[in-house]
Image (tube, rainbow, N blue to C red; front, top):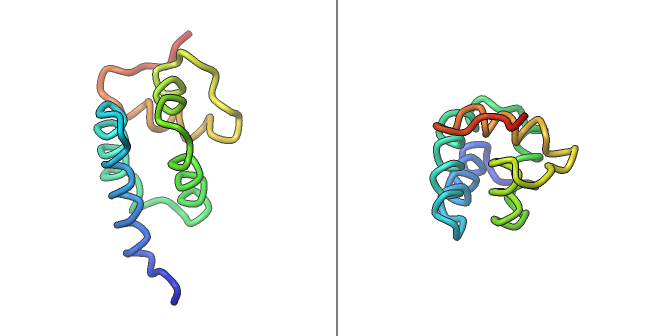
Length: 90
């Protein structure tokens, strides 16, 4: 059975809220609530691939303490732009 778009959004929102690191729960929950419904399928595919990454790596990419892999850089920039108190490091 094929997953509906609505079911996929619900699954990705849930995965965004239950990460394991509270900071990631908050950052990704807010991003998912604002952005996922408007994302085209290719962007959702990339977001889903990003969710499979380690939480400590994701947090390091978002706060700028580690370089973001190029494939995720535009998405991480988008997440960072919407996160309160986070700006892109110079």
